[in-house]
Image 1: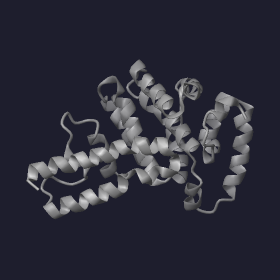
Image 2: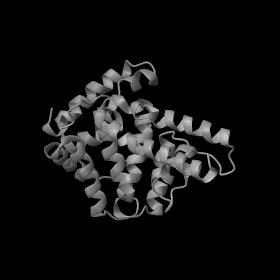
Image 3: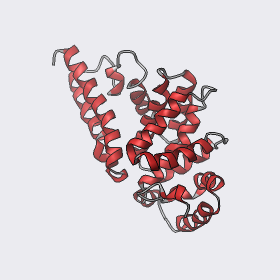
Image 4: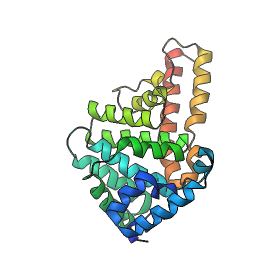
Length: 248
């Protein structure tokens, strides 16, 4: 298989099938096309979405992230160098300079193509667990914020992606609040109203801690656990703000 595929050291699973595999097949040629056919055949033998999600590998996440990143970066009608740098730095941090450069070459090819957002997201949601899909949305907002502000068109694009991935609006608004508001809206992060009782606040906090705990994405590798810690810290920060406000 091509060296451009081998950069994903943890391997690939379902991402080489369906529309995602087709996109990379056009970019990388016959090596991925052959793998795509093999994965498609394997996919037919899987009986339930739960079974498929258990087979999700870090490589599947990375390919999904590359494609969705390209969609978000183009959402405001321009390609900002700071956003491209964010993607490059993200992969450099995860895999080192050499592998990151290979990934970025693929990314530059993807961003020039028209991506079928709906079908790509359908493949992702049918094969990727909920915690990993939340992580994708968090990273997409990080890219959108890389140029200093999140454009309303980028918000709408991420909102559509979240909907296609079956991410609830409450979860979407929670993650958005971590990036959008000048002063973080702690209540939005915890997915509660400002009129919530102390008991409701504590219940919401425990729920969010469980939802965003880094261990939820352990199967994606240590690198992604570090990324998940960002959301986890925001949840803790939100709770501390409310505690101080309420005098708890």
